[in-house]
Image 1: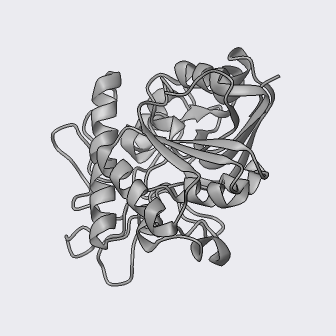
Image 2 (image 1 turned 30 degrees about the horizontal axis):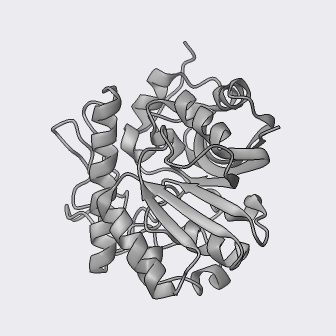
Image 3 (image 1 turned 180 degrees about the horizontal axis):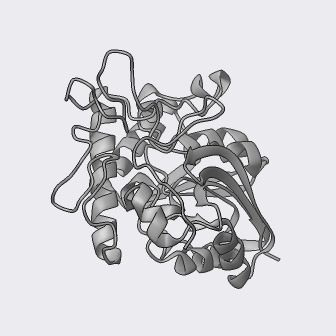
Length: 299
């Protein structure tokens, strides 16, 4: 095994952009979404470490190797907490990965609930009249921005498994006056849309959270129309980092333990039938792990 020294904790930033969980630490000594408070008080995540085997908002769990339902429970708890805190006025991300013009289009609660590791809309190249699907749509930030870009003749769908996030997203859509959006409850491993009905799939730091990525890739391929494309942001490991080493860096719900390596991503999408597959690292996230843009097309 490669001798690599991994330090758990706050993901790194190299270009000033936020990571999956937003700003890590503020100057007052209180933690941000992922940070550790010097005063002993957590920020928007309430606690940074769990002792029961389930993570807090971004904290390390004592057991990161659970089965799919255990992982879903950890992820659901974390995102339910983030939605509740965003609705109450706390920030777990703040939409810092979006430009001023994009932030100006959105309700404040959508920005507060942003937990992404990138901005997939910068590579999705949405056009008027297209149908777009956001996997793990959270508070709806990318769905609402997509709805503006596809226009009144297009449609923007969001898919999320967390009731609190769906409630927040629908409230944000109403506040934004978006009439061409629809939010669905479900899992990204079993997308509740018909075959061949989507032009573009986007996702922002969510696929790494799934315990069954082959099913996610197969479902993406199924719902896309021929010629349809994906443009997603995710956390991706360098190829030399083993799954065991990834678990040292962080737990599943903090977007690390479940991250694929670059070659695993390329191979998984290719096996699902995608072509023109690419994985581009965009920023450091943790040691030997990166925020990345993933592109592919259904033939």
